[in-house]
Image: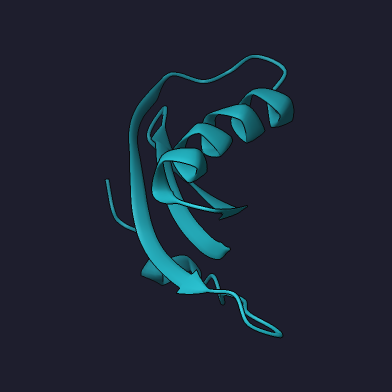
Length: 72
């Protein structure tokens, strides 16, 4: 399993999304599913970028620092 960090650009905002999945294909699908669950009305998504990928060991995580995000 791997830990994926995505950045989704939707309506001129960057939304960080963290996913655990077996491979990249499943991770990208999971991003869409999680966005649908989170938002009452799904925003218009213009880009989904895989920002970082880590193999999960006993522990794994990400620090999401606002200035790291891609700029629009």
